[in-house]
Length: 163
Image 1 (spheres, rainbow, N blue to C red):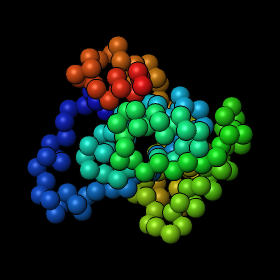
Image 2: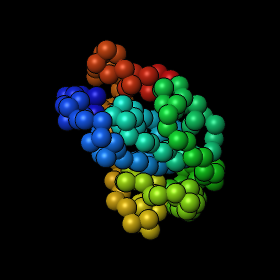
Image 3: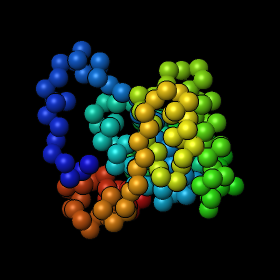
């Protein structure tokens, strides 16, 4: 995302039109921190465009600390206990699926669910909520490796990599 040109569409919008186009995007990650980290630049880009971002992640405090250390204090952080699934994507699917459905049981569902390829429970939850799901299969070498761009060109990527 940081290598894309700035989206002029958002800069030229009137406040009313911009408000209509705002989305609530849910992100879901596998229990391992390395699966959350590549999603951070995408979350930042959406927050920069005034979208609402909710992140479903393992309850281990390192995950919320990672979001905060990268400057993502405006992300709604939803902790889900996936402690028994750190090395197994299948056992993490159930808690993630249930956690997402529980979170949206008393609020409107997200516009879209973006999930890490090791978090298939999020895709099932999106289906149950009647929302589209987008699977992200990040390659850390091109997604967050700071050697590919300068800190000025990609500050979020640098913070995510070094935090």
